[in-house]
Length: 100
Image 1 (cartoon, rainbow, N blue to C red):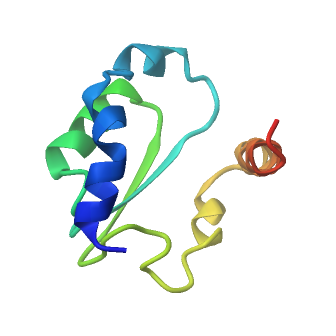
Image 2 (cartoon, rainbow, N blue to C red):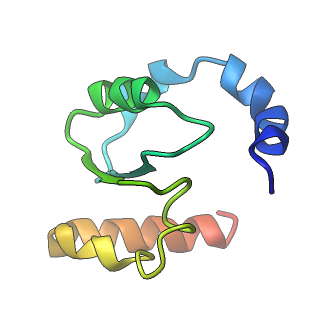
């Protein structure tokens, strides 16, 4: 889907500032970003990293929206996390995909 479509779809979400909620995040957080992301800039990532100082950050050089645009990255980066962190990420993903 072209970036212009995504930008239009997320315009309202992007206008709202949800950064105040980031201080409440206690779960292990993995931030994946592509350096060619046409929606979220390097400045956006810097702000996100500042708001989530304990997060693991991985930038994919030349990629747009990882992990979808970086073959083989789905879940592979979970190896960077401890077993307890992995369990938390997998559990959160399972709950999210079940609509809970």
